[in-house]
Length: 331
Image 1 (cartoon, rainbow, N blue to C red):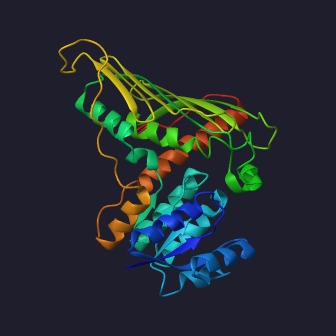
Image 2 (cartoon, one colour):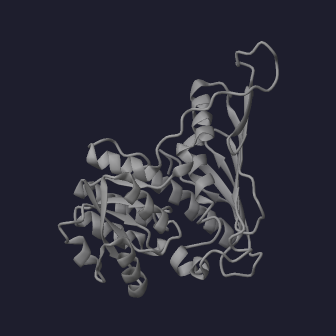
């Protein structure tokens, strides 16, 4: 049995994570900390857990083996470093931190402590994206020329997100820092080393952070990714399009179409493929990895690569320029 503490209810996914943990049957939620005492205390009562107003006191508890971090993104580095130093395994909501420098500090603490770390990258567990990775690895698309991913909803348009979601000091950004994480980490996973990035962010509802955003990224393999996200679009179908010199994959939801010069088909044209099985959610994999001493999915390097893209995207937006990434082995 794994004893877990929930570190803040700030993030909109926090309650869902707690519910999921309680459904697994091998997890006890034993304690809660929150930077807002009233919110944390009420949530602890709801969960049947102890509330600790002092984070250090919570991390000293013998009935806490691991923590789920849903604090404001701006607090991630301090919270996770404290947890690692206390010997607690860590699951964190994306983004890992606001800067690569903060990610490096977290990574150093986690490695020094020898605890297990996982970041929430659910799109990497879904069948269409797993299929895309499989097709790339098998060479059925040839060289990738273009990746386009769209992810959006109407949370800012219809005001169903909490108002603090638009506080840059807490969240670090708007649509791209929130929903945009998913296209960002998928692009990093599929295309590798980024070369340069541009951004176009807009403020449709007049809030302090962007609610409609697009980034264009060129990768070292010459592929281009167009990553689109929005908090102001109505009934937005997800879009995932991967174009190569020898094949194309287009997915919307679970509907997938594929064509390749290498495909084994009696008739030329678009074909349907059997999708891979979905992998367990990252939170489930984290729990299983701790209890069974297994490998962790979506680790420190993955989280740092996401933050590298996000940090550069916001610099490109603020400074209205193309940001170049330092290349391995470069000056």
